[in-house]
Length: 113
Image (cartoon, rainbow, N blue to C red; front, side):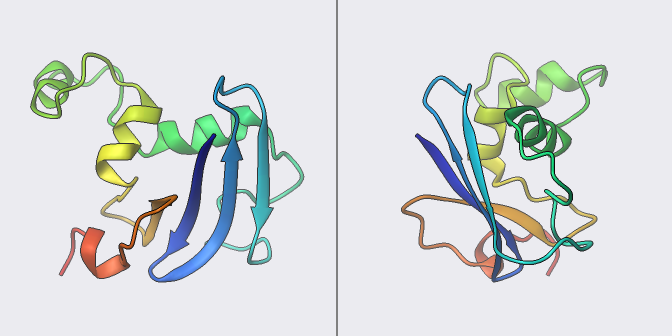
């Protein structure tokens, strides 16, 4: 299983459970649909999870993408692998991904101080 929790700062927003083959998903919303809930609405599919993860990556057409991937020791812009490294942290919001077994908090992963 590929299990993680979507966090907003130090608050849990959703728990996501993805099968090993990335074909099945279960999403447990921990806050109601709102601006901090990335899985608002009724579409709780694997495609929705993949889209969320992909939105936390660099764009595929970026001119310096290969250089960025090389620095991250990745051979492709794989959302599953990229988010394991970055925890999905973005500059423009306070959402991030906490993986099963991690003892991290927002202060450990945030870019902005």
